[in-house]
Length: 253
Image 1: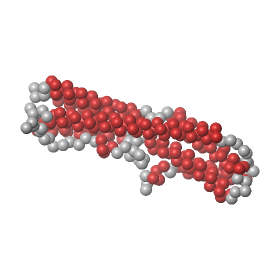
Image 2: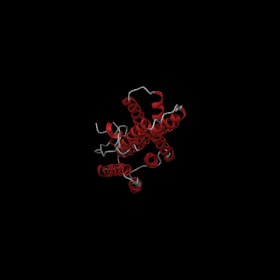
Image 3: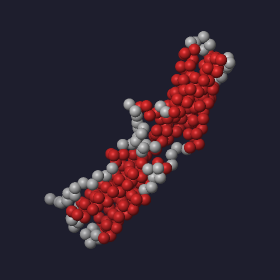
Image 4: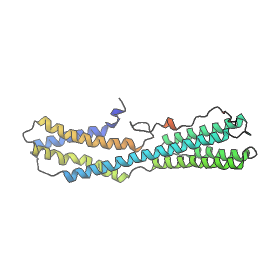
């Protein structure tokens, strides 16, 4: 239930109060005019739709990059398992490195600075591990592992870039300004077109329209960071974590 109420915040309360106050002033000072609000509505709806669409697109791309990250880690793990010349202790060391890199990366996603250098350093240790064990790891297998390590690095870099570079700030600021200006245009128009309607209905329509707009804006804000585990549509990061497995040597029959 708390997640469903997450889109209702201080902005919702402030805009609702603005709608009530503006409607009251319209009645008190007989402010009413016949204004075509279509153009103004477009000025509000267009940036809302644009930013929400871009936020969902970023979320979908993040899912692709996280899948690339996890599949790369798993592929590296399986490559080392297939190397018969490595003992169980060596395979366990690699699994621990992969698990550590995964944890460090997701810690970076949840932090403010989004520093993935510790995770990158841990991934580089896998390359050093290959160099130290070049006698047990064939050149073809080493090249294959390096290719999968590249997928891991690409997944990390692309995901962190999505987090650090969101939808245009200017567009979001423009959108919020026009959402708060909307009651000043809408309320007098409602008063003009519904002169004989109950006062409660006029107040209700004004607050309802404001609530819808600010709720859509809050949805976009929630979608802006799909990694913080606050919004309803946030990415379930635990599904993309690599967890070290017990080494089970794969042998041919």
